[in-house]
Amino acid sequence: MWFEENELPEVRELTLPGVGRFQVPVLIERIDEGATHGWQLRYGEWTLFEDLAGELGASAALAMAVSEMTARIAYRGK
Figure 1 (tube, rainbow, N blue to C red):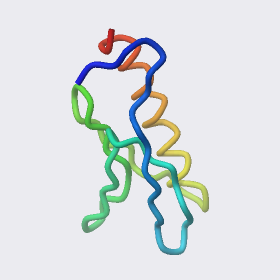
Figure 2 (tube, rainbow, N blue to C red; figure 1 turned 30 degrees about the vertical axis):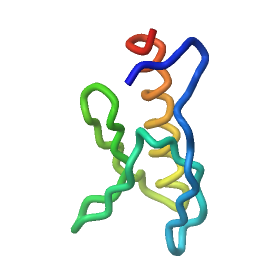
Figure 3 (cartoon, rainbow, N blue to C red; figure 1 turned 135 degrees about the vertical axis):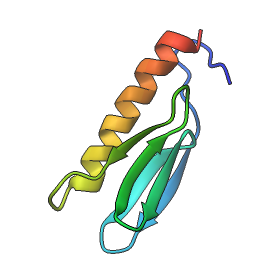
Figure 4 (cartoon, helix red, strand yellow; figure 1 turned 120 degrees about the horizontal axis):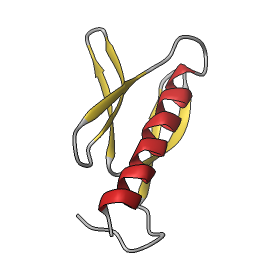
């Protein structure tokens, strides 16, 4: 999957019960299995960004995943 300059993947809306709604790029999946809760970036090496502690933990983890995704697209996607 290759991206043109300044092009980012499409996003979808995802609602986490008790947490809120998120706009999530299609290259990032939500993982909620057992004790694992976080966002998995699936572009290049698959990387899990686990939710951080606190009320905004899922939001912070998603922000880190999106930041890494953007960096990988800039590096690999041209």
